[in-house]
Length: 307
Length: 299
View 1: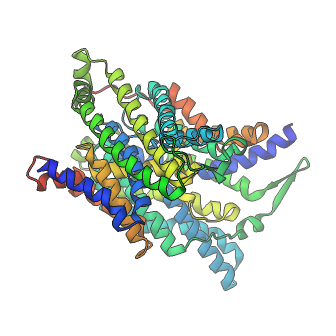
View 2: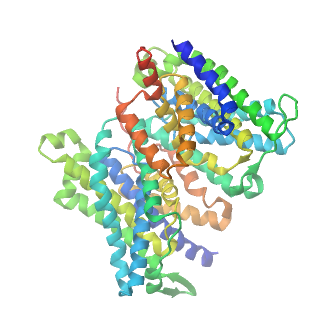
View 3: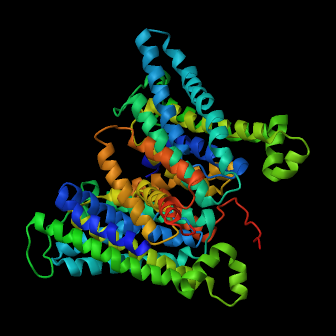
Protein backbone atom coordinates (compact mmCIF):
# COMPACT_ATOMS: atom_id res chain seq x y z
CA UNK A 1 0.00 0.00 0.00
CA UNK A 2 2.70 2.47 1.01
CA UNK A 3 5.00 1.47 -1.83
CA UNK A 4 2.12 2.00 -4.26
CA UNK A 5 1.32 5.43 -2.81
CA UNK A 6 4.99 6.36 -2.98
CA UNK A 7 5.28 5.31 -6.63
CA UNK A 8 2.09 7.16 -7.60
CA UNK A 9 3.40 10.30 -5.89
CA UNK A 10 6.69 10.05 -7.78
CA UNK A 11 4.99 9.57 -11.15
CA UNK A 12 2.71 12.54 -10.46
CA UNK A 13 5.74 14.64 -9.51
CA UNK A 14 7.65 13.60 -12.63
CA UNK A 15 4.71 14.31 -14.93
CA UNK A 16 3.43 17.51 -13.29
CA UNK A 17 5.68 19.92 -15.27
CA UNK A 18 4.63 18.24 -18.51
CA UNK A 19 0.97 18.93 -17.75
CA UNK A 20 1.55 22.38 -16.23
CA UNK A 21 4.96 23.90 -17.06
CA UNK A 22 4.53 26.75 -14.58
CA UNK A 23 4.56 24.19 -11.78
CA UNK A 24 8.16 23.18 -12.46
CA UNK A 25 9.81 26.14 -10.76
CA UNK A 26 7.39 25.97 -7.83
CA UNK A 27 8.07 22.27 -7.35
CA UNK A 28 11.84 22.69 -7.64
CA UNK A 29 11.74 25.28 -4.87
CA UNK A 30 9.44 23.03 -2.84
CA UNK A 31 11.95 20.19 -3.08
CA UNK A 32 14.77 22.56 -2.07
CA UNK A 33 12.84 23.76 0.97
CA UNK A 34 11.80 20.18 1.70
CA UNK A 35 15.47 19.24 2.10
CA UNK A 36 16.06 22.07 4.56
CA UNK A 37 12.84 21.21 6.43
CA UNK A 38 13.98 17.57 6.61
CA UNK A 39 17.15 18.86 8.28
CA UNK A 40 15.02 20.68 10.84
CA UNK A 41 12.88 17.56 11.29
CA UNK A 42 15.95 15.43 12.07
CA UNK A 43 16.80 17.79 14.94
CA UNK A 44 13.18 17.89 16.10
CA UNK A 45 13.32 14.13 16.55
CA UNK A 46 16.04 14.75 19.09
CA UNK A 47 13.75 17.29 20.77
CA UNK A 48 15.83 20.23 19.56
CA UNK A 49 14.18 23.14 17.81
CA UNK A 50 16.40 25.35 15.68
CA UNK A 51 15.12 28.76 14.63
CA UNK A 52 18.26 29.49 12.70
CA UNK A 53 18.57 26.65 10.27
CA UNK A 54 18.14 28.86 7.24
CA UNK A 55 21.77 29.84 7.87
CA UNK A 56 22.99 26.54 6.42
CA UNK A 57 20.64 26.99 3.48
CA UNK A 58 22.27 30.40 2.93
CA UNK A 59 25.84 29.15 3.53
CA UNK A 60 25.46 26.65 0.72
CA UNK A 61 23.78 29.15 -1.61
CA UNK A 62 26.46 31.80 -1.03
CA UNK A 63 29.26 29.24 -1.29
CA UNK A 64 27.90 28.36 -4.73
CA UNK A 65 27.72 32.01 -5.73
CA UNK A 66 31.35 32.54 -4.68
CA UNK A 67 32.48 29.38 -6.48
CA UNK A 68 30.66 30.46 -9.63
CA UNK A 69 32.37 33.83 -9.38
CA UNK A 70 35.71 32.01 -9.10
CA UNK A 71 34.94 30.14 -12.30
CA UNK A 72 33.42 26.83 -11.14
CA UNK A 73 30.56 26.25 -13.52
CA UNK A 74 29.36 22.68 -13.22
CA UNK A 75 26.14 21.58 -11.54
CA UNK A 76 27.60 18.47 -9.87
CA UNK A 77 30.62 20.31 -8.49
CA UNK A 78 28.54 23.24 -7.26
CA UNK A 79 26.04 20.94 -5.58
CA UNK A 80 28.75 18.90 -3.87
CA UNK A 81 30.87 21.86 -2.80
CA UNK A 82 27.86 23.90 -1.64
CA UNK A 83 26.67 20.99 0.46
CA UNK A 84 30.21 20.44 1.74
CA UNK A 85 30.41 24.09 2.82
CA UNK A 86 27.25 23.84 4.90
CA UNK A 87 28.28 20.45 6.27
CA UNK A 88 31.57 21.87 7.53
CA UNK A 89 29.71 24.91 8.89
CA UNK A 90 27.30 22.52 10.60
CA UNK A 91 30.14 20.55 12.16
CA UNK A 92 31.83 23.67 13.52
CA UNK A 93 28.66 25.42 14.74
CA UNK A 94 27.26 22.11 15.98
CA UNK A 95 30.31 21.53 18.18
CA UNK A 96 29.16 24.53 20.23
CA UNK A 97 25.42 23.98 19.91
CA UNK A 98 25.26 20.42 21.25
CA UNK A 99 26.10 21.72 24.72
CA UNK A 100 22.71 23.43 24.90
CA UNK A 101 19.13 22.22 25.05
CA UNK A 102 15.59 23.49 24.71
CA UNK A 103 15.17 27.23 24.55
CA UNK A 104 18.91 27.96 24.78
CA UNK A 105 19.57 25.80 21.74
CA UNK A 106 16.87 27.66 19.84
CA UNK A 107 18.21 31.06 20.91
CA UNK A 108 21.83 30.30 20.02
CA UNK A 109 20.88 29.07 16.59
CA UNK A 110 18.85 32.23 16.11
CA UNK A 111 21.78 34.40 17.23
CA UNK A 112 24.17 32.56 14.92
CA UNK A 113 21.89 32.90 11.91
CA UNK A 114 21.29 36.58 12.59
CA UNK A 115 25.04 37.25 12.79
CA UNK A 116 25.34 35.61 9.38
CA UNK A 117 22.34 37.52 8.02
CA UNK A 118 23.62 40.88 9.25
CA UNK A 119 27.12 40.20 7.92
CA UNK A 120 25.86 39.12 4.51
CA UNK A 121 23.60 42.14 4.15
CA UNK A 122 26.25 44.63 5.34
CA UNK A 123 29.43 43.47 3.60
CA UNK A 124 28.61 44.99 0.24
CA UNK A 125 32.10 44.58 -1.12
CA UNK A 126 32.08 40.81 -0.72
CA UNK A 127 28.47 39.63 -0.83
CA UNK A 128 26.77 42.41 -2.76
CA UNK A 129 24.81 43.25 0.40
CA UNK A 130 21.06 43.44 0.04
CA UNK A 131 21.37 43.36 -3.75
CA UNK A 132 22.49 39.76 -3.43
CA UNK A 133 24.58 37.80 -5.89
CA UNK A 134 23.71 36.57 -9.36
CA UNK A 135 24.45 33.08 -10.54
CA UNK A 136 24.96 32.18 -14.20
CA UNK A 137 23.39 28.99 -15.55
CA UNK A 138 25.88 26.19 -14.84
CA UNK A 139 26.62 23.28 -17.16
CA UNK A 140 24.94 19.99 -16.36
CA UNK A 141 27.33 17.00 -16.21
CA UNK A 142 29.57 18.87 -18.63
CA UNK A 143 26.76 19.69 -21.05
CA UNK A 144 26.04 23.36 -21.60
CA UNK A 145 22.30 23.99 -21.47
CA UNK A 146 20.11 27.04 -21.91
CA UNK A 147 18.18 28.32 -18.89
CA UNK A 148 14.93 26.45 -19.63
CA UNK A 149 16.65 23.10 -20.27
CA UNK A 150 18.83 23.49 -17.19
CA UNK A 151 15.78 24.19 -15.03
CA UNK A 152 14.16 21.00 -16.26
CA UNK A 153 17.35 19.01 -15.65
CA UNK A 154 17.63 20.56 -12.19
CA UNK A 155 14.05 19.58 -11.38
CA UNK A 156 14.55 15.92 -12.24
CA UNK A 157 17.93 15.88 -10.51
CA UNK A 158 16.08 17.26 -7.48
CA UNK A 159 13.58 14.39 -7.56
CA UNK A 160 16.37 11.81 -7.87
CA UNK A 161 18.23 13.45 -4.98
CA UNK A 162 15.06 13.56 -2.91
CA UNK A 163 14.54 9.82 -3.31
CA UNK A 164 18.22 8.92 -2.87
CA UNK A 165 19.03 11.19 0.05
CA UNK A 166 15.61 10.54 1.59
CA UNK A 167 16.38 6.82 1.59
CA UNK A 168 19.75 7.51 3.20
CA UNK A 169 18.17 9.62 5.94
CA UNK A 170 15.56 6.94 6.54
CA UNK A 171 18.32 4.35 6.99
CA UNK A 172 20.06 6.72 9.37
CA UNK A 173 16.93 7.29 11.47
CA UNK A 174 16.29 3.54 11.62
CA UNK A 175 19.89 2.81 12.65
CA UNK A 176 21.01 2.61 16.29
CA UNK A 177 22.39 6.12 15.87
CA UNK A 178 18.99 7.40 14.77
CA UNK A 179 17.26 5.65 17.66
CA UNK A 180 19.79 7.15 20.05
CA UNK A 181 18.76 10.57 18.69
CA UNK A 182 15.10 9.97 19.52
CA UNK A 183 16.19 8.67 22.91
CA UNK A 184 17.90 12.00 23.67
CA UNK A 185 14.43 13.52 23.47
CA UNK A 186 12.85 10.85 25.67
CA UNK A 187 15.45 10.58 28.40
CA UNK A 188 18.89 11.99 27.93
CA UNK A 189 20.21 10.98 31.33
CA UNK A 190 19.29 7.35 30.88
CA UNK A 191 21.14 7.36 27.59
CA UNK A 192 24.25 8.64 29.32
CA UNK A 193 23.97 5.92 31.97
CA UNK A 194 23.89 3.40 29.14
CA UNK A 195 27.24 4.76 28.00
CA UNK A 196 26.02 6.49 24.85
CA UNK A 197 27.91 9.73 24.18
CA UNK A 198 24.96 12.10 23.85
CA UNK A 199 26.93 15.03 22.46
CA UNK A 200 28.43 12.90 19.69
CA UNK A 201 24.96 11.61 18.78
CA UNK A 202 23.69 15.19 18.63
CA UNK A 203 26.71 16.47 16.72
CA UNK A 204 26.21 13.83 14.04
CA UNK A 205 22.52 14.73 13.80
CA UNK A 206 23.34 18.44 13.67
CA UNK A 207 25.90 17.95 10.90
CA UNK A 208 23.49 15.80 8.90
CA UNK A 209 20.76 18.38 9.30
CA UNK A 210 23.11 21.15 8.16
CA UNK A 211 24.11 19.07 5.13
CA UNK A 212 20.43 18.54 4.25
CA UNK A 213 19.78 22.28 4.49
CA UNK A 214 22.86 22.72 2.29
CA UNK A 215 21.47 20.47 -0.45
CA UNK A 216 18.28 22.54 -0.31
CA UNK A 217 20.19 25.81 -0.48
CA UNK A 218 22.21 24.56 -3.46
CA UNK A 219 19.10 23.56 -5.40
CA UNK A 220 17.35 26.83 -4.54
CA UNK A 221 20.39 28.92 -5.53
CA UNK A 222 20.61 27.24 -8.93
CA UNK A 223 16.86 27.34 -9.50
CA UNK A 224 16.48 31.04 -8.64
CA UNK A 225 19.86 32.20 -9.98
CA UNK A 226 19.83 35.09 -7.53
CA UNK A 227 20.94 34.74 -3.92
CA UNK A 228 19.77 37.21 -1.27
CA UNK A 229 20.55 37.75 2.44
CA UNK A 230 16.87 36.93 3.16
CA UNK A 231 17.86 33.29 2.70
CA UNK A 232 19.29 33.51 6.24
CA UNK A 233 16.68 35.75 7.94
CA UNK A 234 15.02 34.26 11.02
CA UNK A 235 11.56 34.17 9.46
CA UNK A 236 12.96 31.85 6.77
CA UNK A 237 14.13 29.56 9.57
CA UNK A 238 10.71 29.80 11.16
CA UNK A 239 9.12 28.75 7.89
CA UNK A 240 11.37 25.69 7.72
CA UNK A 241 10.18 24.55 11.14
CA UNK A 242 6.62 25.28 10.04
CA UNK A 243 7.02 23.12 6.92
CA UNK A 244 8.56 20.29 8.94
CA UNK A 245 5.78 20.28 11.51
CA UNK A 246 2.99 20.77 8.99
CA UNK A 247 4.28 17.82 6.98
CA UNK A 248 5.02 15.76 10.05
CA UNK A 249 8.35 14.71 11.50
CA UNK A 250 7.39 11.04 11.89
CA UNK A 251 9.00 10.03 8.60
CA UNK A 252 11.36 11.27 5.93
CA UNK A 253 8.50 11.91 3.51
CA UNK A 254 6.75 14.33 5.94
CA UNK A 255 8.79 17.50 5.35
CA UNK A 256 8.70 16.97 1.57
CA UNK A 257 4.94 16.45 1.63
CA UNK A 258 4.58 19.58 3.77
CA UNK A 259 6.80 21.60 1.48
CA UNK A 260 5.19 20.47 -1.80
CA UNK A 261 1.71 20.97 -0.35
CA UNK A 262 2.53 24.46 0.94
CA UNK A 263 4.33 25.74 -2.15
CA UNK A 264 1.62 24.58 -4.54
CA UNK A 265 -1.11 25.90 -2.27
CA UNK A 266 0.78 29.18 -1.94
CA UNK A 267 1.05 29.59 -5.71
CA UNK A 268 -2.64 28.95 -6.12
CA UNK A 269 -3.66 31.08 -3.13
CA UNK A 270 -1.75 34.27 -4.01
CA UNK A 271 -4.02 34.64 -7.04
CA UNK A 272 -7.11 34.50 -4.85
CA UNK A 273 -6.21 36.10 -1.54
CA UNK A 274 -3.43 38.27 -0.17
CA UNK A 275 -3.88 37.05 3.40
CA UNK A 276 -1.68 34.03 2.80
CA UNK A 277 0.36 34.36 6.02
CA UNK A 278 -2.82 34.68 8.03
CA UNK A 279 -4.21 31.48 6.56
CA UNK A 280 -0.97 29.61 7.02
CA UNK A 281 -0.64 30.85 10.60
CA UNK A 282 -4.11 29.60 11.45
CA UNK A 283 -3.39 26.31 9.67
CA UNK A 284 -0.15 25.87 11.61
CA UNK A 285 -1.85 26.41 14.95
CA UNK A 286 -4.66 24.08 13.90
CA UNK A 287 -2.24 21.33 12.90
CA UNK A 288 -0.32 21.61 16.17
CA UNK A 289 -3.43 21.31 18.32
CA UNK A 290 -5.50 18.88 16.28
CA UNK A 291 -3.11 16.96 14.04
CA UNK A 292 0.14 16.57 15.99
CA UNK A 293 1.68 14.05 13.59
CA UNK A 294 1.20 16.34 10.58
CA UNK A 295 -0.07 15.61 7.08
CA UNK A 296 2.18 12.59 6.83
CA UNK A 297 0.60 11.15 9.98
CA UNK A 298 -2.82 11.70 8.40
CA UNK A 299 -1.82 9.79 5.27
CA UNK A 300 -0.39 6.95 7.29
CA UNK A 301 -3.49 6.74 9.42
CA UNK A 302 -5.69 6.64 6.30
CA UNK A 303 -3.63 3.83 4.84
CA UNK A 304 -4.25 1.79 7.96
CA UNK A 305 -0.91 2.07 9.70
CA UNK A 306 -0.18 3.38 13.15
CA UNK A 307 0.76 7.04 12.89
CA UNK B 1 36.82 61.50 19.99
CA UNK B 2 34.55 62.08 22.99
CA UNK B 3 32.82 64.92 21.13
CA UNK B 4 31.58 62.41 18.60
CA UNK B 5 31.12 59.48 20.97
CA UNK B 6 28.84 61.17 23.51
CA UNK B 7 26.15 62.30 21.03
CA UNK B 8 26.41 58.86 19.44
CA UNK B 9 25.98 57.29 22.86
CA UNK B 10 22.81 59.32 23.51
CA UNK B 11 21.54 58.19 20.15
CA UNK B 12 22.46 54.57 20.86
CA UNK B 13 20.90 54.62 24.33
CA UNK B 14 17.68 56.19 23.00
CA UNK B 15 17.24 53.39 20.46
CA UNK B 16 18.28 50.87 23.13
CA UNK B 17 15.52 52.29 25.35
CA UNK B 18 12.94 51.50 22.66
CA UNK B 19 14.21 47.93 22.32
CA UNK B 20 14.28 47.68 26.11
CA UNK B 21 10.51 48.25 26.33
CA UNK B 22 9.95 45.31 24.01
CA UNK B 23 12.58 43.14 25.67
CA UNK B 24 11.29 43.73 29.20
CA UNK B 25 7.78 42.80 28.05
CA UNK B 26 9.15 39.63 26.47
CA UNK B 27 11.05 38.77 29.63
CA UNK B 28 8.02 39.45 31.84
CA UNK B 29 5.77 37.25 29.72
CA UNK B 30 8.42 34.54 29.69
CA UNK B 31 8.86 34.46 33.44
CA UNK B 32 5.13 34.34 34.22
CA UNK B 33 3.79 32.25 31.33
CA UNK B 34 7.04 30.34 30.68
CA UNK B 35 6.43 30.80 26.97
CA UNK B 36 8.84 32.54 24.65
CA UNK B 37 6.50 34.63 22.52
CA UNK B 38 7.96 34.84 19.01
CA UNK B 39 5.08 37.15 18.01
CA UNK B 40 6.03 39.73 20.65
CA UNK B 41 7.74 42.01 18.13
CA UNK B 42 4.50 42.28 16.17
CA UNK B 43 2.91 44.18 19.05
CA UNK B 44 5.72 46.70 18.70
CA UNK B 45 4.95 47.34 15.04
CA UNK B 46 1.18 47.36 15.62
CA UNK B 47 1.74 49.86 18.44
CA UNK B 48 3.81 51.98 16.05
CA UNK B 49 1.09 51.95 13.40
CA UNK B 50 -1.71 52.73 15.85
CA UNK B 51 0.29 55.60 17.36
CA UNK B 52 1.20 57.04 13.97
CA UNK B 53 -2.42 56.83 12.82
CA UNK B 54 -3.76 58.53 15.94
CA UNK B 55 -0.98 61.15 15.74
CA UNK B 56 -1.84 61.94 12.13
CA UNK B 57 -5.52 62.14 13.05
CA UNK B 58 -4.77 64.62 15.87
CA UNK B 59 -2.70 66.73 13.48
CA UNK B 60 -5.38 66.51 10.80
CA UNK B 61 -8.25 67.41 13.13
CA UNK B 62 -6.37 70.50 14.28
CA UNK B 63 -6.39 69.51 17.96
CA UNK B 64 -3.85 70.77 20.47
CA UNK B 65 -0.53 69.16 19.37
CA UNK B 66 0.44 68.45 23.00
CA UNK B 67 -2.33 65.84 22.94
CA UNK B 68 0.03 63.70 20.88
CA UNK B 69 1.93 62.76 24.06
CA UNK B 70 -0.95 61.11 25.93
CA UNK B 71 -1.96 59.69 22.53
CA UNK B 72 1.28 57.67 22.44
CA UNK B 73 0.46 56.03 25.78
CA UNK B 74 -3.18 55.64 24.79
CA UNK B 75 -2.17 53.81 21.59
CA UNK B 76 -0.18 51.27 23.57
CA UNK B 77 -3.11 50.82 25.96
CA UNK B 78 -5.48 50.25 23.04
CA UNK B 79 -3.22 47.56 21.56
CA UNK B 80 -2.84 45.88 24.96
CA UNK B 81 -6.61 45.91 25.59
CA UNK B 82 -7.36 44.56 22.11
CA UNK B 83 -4.81 41.77 22.01
CA UNK B 84 -3.72 40.99 25.57
CA UNK B 85 -6.71 39.16 27.05
CA UNK B 86 -7.78 37.72 23.70
CA UNK B 87 -4.45 36.18 22.71
CA UNK B 88 -3.69 34.93 26.21
CA UNK B 89 -7.00 33.18 26.77
CA UNK B 90 -7.54 31.87 23.23
CA UNK B 91 -4.03 30.84 22.33
CA UNK B 92 -1.23 31.08 24.88
CA UNK B 93 -3.19 29.25 27.57
CA UNK B 94 -3.25 26.06 25.49
CA UNK B 95 0.52 25.92 25.23
CA UNK B 96 1.38 26.03 28.96
CA UNK B 97 3.44 23.06 30.00
CA UNK B 98 3.94 21.89 26.40
CA UNK B 99 7.40 21.50 24.89
CA UNK B 100 9.36 24.58 23.78
CA UNK B 101 9.16 23.43 20.16
CA UNK B 102 5.35 23.61 20.28
CA UNK B 103 5.30 26.95 22.10
CA UNK B 104 7.69 28.52 19.62
CA UNK B 105 5.68 27.17 16.68
CA UNK B 106 2.31 28.32 18.00
CA UNK B 107 3.65 31.81 18.61
CA UNK B 108 5.31 31.76 15.17
CA UNK B 109 1.86 31.03 13.76
CA UNK B 110 0.57 34.00 15.76
CA UNK B 111 3.40 36.10 14.31
CA UNK B 112 2.31 35.23 10.77
CA UNK B 113 -1.30 36.07 11.59
CA UNK B 114 -0.44 39.42 13.19
CA UNK B 115 1.88 40.41 10.34
CA UNK B 116 -0.93 39.91 7.84
CA UNK B 117 -3.54 41.60 10.05
CA UNK B 118 -1.26 44.61 10.29
CA UNK B 119 -0.79 44.66 6.52
CA UNK B 120 -4.52 44.37 5.88
CA UNK B 121 -5.46 47.12 8.35
CA UNK B 122 -2.60 49.59 7.80
CA UNK B 123 -1.40 48.71 4.30
CA UNK B 124 2.20 48.38 3.18
CA UNK B 125 3.21 52.04 3.15
CA UNK B 126 5.15 53.51 6.04
CA UNK B 127 3.70 56.24 8.24
CA UNK B 128 5.64 59.14 9.75
CA UNK B 129 4.42 61.50 12.48
CA UNK B 130 7.00 63.50 14.41
CA UNK B 131 4.96 66.16 16.25
CA UNK B 132 6.13 65.05 19.74
CA UNK B 133 9.77 65.28 18.70
CA UNK B 134 9.29 68.73 17.16
CA UNK B 135 7.43 70.02 20.22
CA UNK B 136 10.21 69.12 22.65
CA UNK B 137 12.94 70.69 20.57
CA UNK B 138 16.57 70.23 21.45
CA UNK B 139 19.12 71.16 24.10
CA UNK B 140 22.63 72.45 23.46
CA UNK B 141 25.19 71.16 25.97
CA UNK B 142 28.84 72.02 25.40
CA UNK B 143 28.40 72.73 21.75
CA UNK B 144 26.54 69.49 21.05
CA UNK B 145 22.83 69.44 20.20
CA UNK B 146 20.69 66.74 21.80
CA UNK B 147 17.10 65.94 20.91
CA UNK B 148 15.06 66.35 24.06
CA UNK B 149 12.79 63.57 22.90
CA UNK B 150 15.70 61.09 22.97
CA UNK B 151 16.59 62.16 26.51
CA UNK B 152 12.94 61.63 27.44
CA UNK B 153 13.07 58.09 26.04
CA UNK B 154 16.08 57.22 28.19
CA UNK B 155 14.39 58.66 31.27
CA UNK B 156 11.19 56.75 30.52
CA UNK B 157 13.11 53.48 30.23
CA UNK B 158 14.68 54.07 33.63
CA UNK B 159 11.23 54.86 34.98
CA UNK B 160 9.86 51.57 33.63
CA UNK B 161 12.61 49.57 35.36
CA UNK B 162 11.82 51.24 38.70
CA UNK B 163 8.07 51.10 38.10
CA UNK B 164 8.09 47.39 37.34
CA UNK B 165 10.24 46.62 40.37
CA UNK B 166 7.92 48.62 42.63
CA UNK B 167 4.87 47.01 41.04
CA UNK B 168 6.26 43.51 41.59
CA UNK B 169 7.48 43.98 45.15
CA UNK B 170 5.21 46.59 46.74
CA UNK B 171 1.72 46.04 45.35
CA UNK B 172 -0.68 43.21 46.02
CA UNK B 173 -1.05 42.40 42.31
CA UNK B 174 2.71 42.33 41.90
CA UNK B 175 3.09 39.95 44.82
CA UNK B 176 0.51 37.64 43.25
CA UNK B 177 2.50 37.67 40.01
CA UNK B 178 5.71 36.91 41.91
CA UNK B 179 3.99 34.03 43.67
CA UNK B 180 2.86 32.53 40.37
CA UNK B 181 6.38 32.89 38.95
CA UNK B 182 7.86 31.17 41.99
CA UNK B 183 5.51 28.18 42.00
CA UNK B 184 2.52 28.05 39.74
CA UNK B 185 0.84 25.03 41.33
CA UNK B 186 1.38 26.16 44.88
CA UNK B 187 0.02 29.61 44.02
CA UNK B 188 -3.08 28.01 42.55
CA UNK B 189 -3.61 25.72 45.51
CA UNK B 190 -3.56 28.59 48.01
CA UNK B 191 -6.33 30.26 46.05
CA UNK B 192 -4.60 32.68 43.71
CA UNK B 193 -6.55 33.16 40.51
CA UNK B 194 -3.70 32.22 38.19
CA UNK B 195 -5.73 32.81 35.04
CA UNK B 196 -6.17 36.43 36.05
CA UNK B 197 -2.45 36.74 36.72
CA UNK B 198 -1.68 35.27 33.30
CA UNK B 199 -4.02 37.65 31.48
CA UNK B 200 -2.70 40.60 33.45
CA UNK B 201 0.98 39.83 32.90
CA UNK B 202 0.53 39.02 29.25
CA UNK B 203 -1.41 42.23 28.66
CA UNK B 204 1.26 44.20 30.50
CA UNK B 205 3.86 42.60 28.24
CA UNK B 206 1.85 43.54 25.15
CA UNK B 207 1.46 47.07 26.52
CA UNK B 208 5.23 47.45 26.98
CA UNK B 209 5.96 46.20 23.46
CA UNK B 210 3.30 48.48 21.95
CA UNK B 211 4.62 51.36 24.05
CA UNK B 212 8.06 50.82 22.55
CA UNK B 213 6.52 50.96 19.09
CA UNK B 214 4.40 54.01 19.88
CA UNK B 215 7.37 55.89 21.34
CA UNK B 216 9.44 54.98 18.29
CA UNK B 217 7.07 56.66 15.82
CA UNK B 218 8.18 60.27 16.40
CA UNK B 219 11.78 59.40 15.50
CA UNK B 220 11.48 56.37 13.24
CA UNK B 221 7.87 56.18 12.04
CA UNK B 222 6.00 52.95 11.37
CA UNK B 223 7.00 50.64 8.54
CA UNK B 224 6.19 47.11 7.42
CA UNK B 225 8.71 44.46 8.45
CA UNK B 226 9.41 46.30 11.69
CA UNK B 227 7.93 43.49 13.79
CA UNK B 228 10.34 40.80 12.58
CA UNK B 229 13.34 43.08 12.98
CA UNK B 230 12.40 44.25 16.47
CA UNK B 231 11.61 40.70 17.53
CA UNK B 232 15.17 39.44 17.12
CA UNK B 233 16.68 42.55 18.69
CA UNK B 234 14.39 42.34 21.72
CA UNK B 235 15.14 38.65 21.86
CA UNK B 236 18.88 39.34 21.88
CA UNK B 237 18.51 41.89 24.67
CA UNK B 238 16.28 39.61 26.76
CA UNK B 239 18.63 36.65 26.27
CA UNK B 240 21.76 38.65 27.12
CA UNK B 241 20.17 39.87 30.35
CA UNK B 242 18.85 36.43 31.17
CA UNK B 243 15.26 35.48 30.32
CA UNK B 244 12.97 36.64 33.10
CA UNK B 245 15.36 39.30 34.46
CA UNK B 246 14.02 42.86 34.39
CA UNK B 247 17.22 44.62 35.50
CA UNK B 248 19.14 42.18 33.32
CA UNK B 249 17.22 43.35 30.29
CA UNK B 250 17.97 46.98 31.19
CA UNK B 251 21.69 46.31 31.51
CA UNK B 252 21.67 44.27 28.31
CA UNK B 253 19.91 47.09 26.46
CA UNK B 254 22.62 49.51 27.60
CA UNK B 255 25.38 47.09 26.56
CA UNK B 256 23.80 46.51 23.15
CA UNK B 257 23.19 50.22 22.66
CA UNK B 258 26.81 51.08 23.47
CA UNK B 259 28.13 48.18 21.40
CA UNK B 260 26.30 49.59 18.41
CA UNK B 261 27.73 53.04 19.10
CA UNK B 262 31.27 51.64 19.16
CA UNK B 263 30.53 49.68 16.00
CA UNK B 264 29.24 52.79 14.23
CA UNK B 265 32.31 54.71 15.33
CA UNK B 266 34.99 52.15 14.49
CA UNK B 267 33.45 49.83 11.88
CA UNK B 268 30.14 51.17 10.51
CA UNK B 269 29.39 48.03 8.51
CA UNK B 270 29.27 46.05 11.76
CA UNK B 271 26.48 48.21 13.25
CA UNK B 272 23.70 45.70 12.64
CA UNK B 273 25.87 42.73 13.58
CA UNK B 274 26.96 44.08 16.97
CA UNK B 275 23.86 43.09 19.03
CA UNK B 276 23.98 39.52 17.77
CA UNK B 277 27.71 39.15 18.33
CA UNK B 278 27.23 40.35 21.91
CA UNK B 279 24.37 37.85 22.28
CA UNK B 280 26.43 35.01 20.86
CA UNK B 281 29.43 35.70 23.07
CA UNK B 282 27.33 36.10 26.22
CA UNK B 283 25.26 32.99 25.56
CA UNK B 284 28.29 30.85 24.76
CA UNK B 285 29.89 31.83 28.07
CA UNK B 286 26.75 32.15 30.19
CA UNK B 287 23.85 30.39 28.46
CA UNK B 288 21.44 31.66 31.10
CA UNK B 289 22.37 35.28 30.42
CA UNK B 290 24.16 37.83 32.58
CA UNK B 291 21.60 37.81 35.41
CA UNK B 292 20.03 34.40 34.88
CA UNK B 293 20.62 31.47 37.17
CA UNK B 294 21.25 27.97 35.93
CA UNK B 295 18.32 25.66 36.66
CA UNK B 296 19.21 22.41 38.34
CA UNK B 297 19.14 19.57 35.93
CA UNK B 298 15.96 17.55 36.03
CA UNK B 299 16.09 13.79 35.70
